[in-house]
Length: 285
Image 1: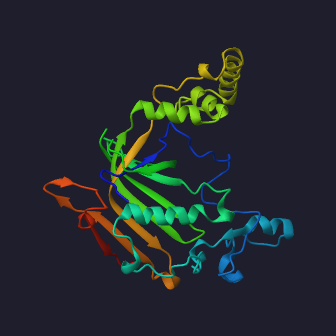
Image 2: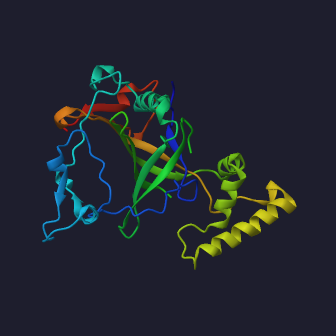
Image 3: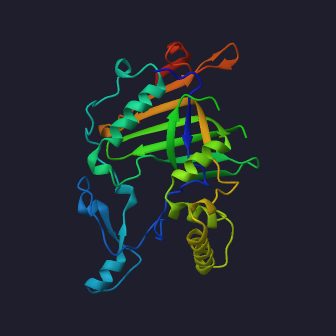
């Protein structure tokens, strides 16, 4: 497999973002329902609010149970064919290794309802403000394609694996965005067309009215009338660092990294011919 100038394609913040339910996602101190983890003892997992004094009935006690976060601890199990990551079993090229892991997670039948191509993208703005958001991977290939450093993180708890990738972000040609735009369901195109993402809006009705107008336009003029917004673009990340992590018992995890070596002051990513351009090493957990 040849990767002369390999990169990873993904949907940007303008592309398909992961739709999340309107739920409170912050740290919960008072909860109505406790789901116990089998690796925890009940007395370690649950605590009573010590500030509460007096007696209470069962309904009150539900409101006074809090989560003992210090005792939260996952028990890593052997969930993959390869129980340990050994350098001798790793591919010479990190793109080939990524392909192996990604295909493996996609083939797990009970994960078909999950977005296994979801990843966290972290960047830092020109004024040094960090930003992290969830995006969707739309491809990884060997094409040559803003010049910003970024980090991607894939985490698959079902198999206790994660991949961290660092590199340079580039804007893709608008033709690629056009091709992907027409492949999306028309409802998704309308959703992207009506939203100036992250801008302040007055209320929910504002979005619904814009959606209604676009749906009328669709009925009158067809799908061709729902055109791609000019700022709805695609991005690629050209990697220079990979870290493959696999969870192990007692936190003795495996961490194998690939670092792109500089040859003649230029980075090269032709993995098929230049195995030695990527330096593989192991990190302590």
